[in-house]
Amino acid sequence: GYVDPKGYKSAMKRSGDEGKMYHQGCVEEYSYMHEHHIVEFADRALLLPDKLIMDMGWVLHMKFTAEGNCDRARCRLTPRGYQQRCGLEYSEHGSFSPVARKQSIFIAISITCHLGLFTRVIDITKAFLYGICKEEVYVQVPEGFNNTADAKQMPFGCNTVLRCIKQIYGMKAAAREFYNVFAKHLTSDRPGCGFYQLPSDGCVFVKCKKDGKNILLKD
Image (cartoon, rainbow, N blue to C red; front, side, top):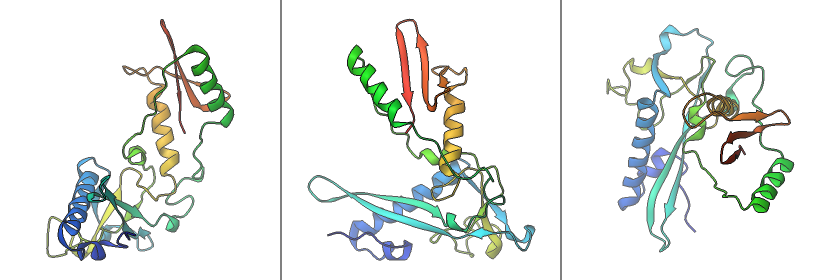
């Protein structure tokens, strides 16, 4: 079977369009991080000597068509979240993120079937990247974009690091902070929102309307 590359260098050595797909995927992922202000450049020289700079790596996966041909490369930047220290790089509240209780899911399905309601599953693209990083967290510039001779890639030379403005996949508080942003948005008075959380389950959001109710479960 197909074996995904274990790193950036390994991916770039893949022959033909496969290597080009991985390169394009990495460029798009890294550009997305900067364009959406998920990370920003920082100067290591201005940080305290004992400040943790987490390692950053690539998780690479090739998606295939029904015919078995390479379709597109999925590339994700992931810091080594296990290096984070409680109270310093993530909150002392921990990394727990609530999910809907089984009873809530069963009840919602039962109501849907009994009343003949419409059910839809929503997948939020790059969900964890919406979470706010409340602590000062720094990561290394990822492989493939750390050429010290290129001022655009490394504006502070060998001292260039990245500060995380938002959470990234692999960080301990990523799931928790996404839930906080998600719940705050649904319960706000913005157009299309106005849900309220059930006291019995913080992952069930209900919105009353003249023509019925909308029930949303976060899992």
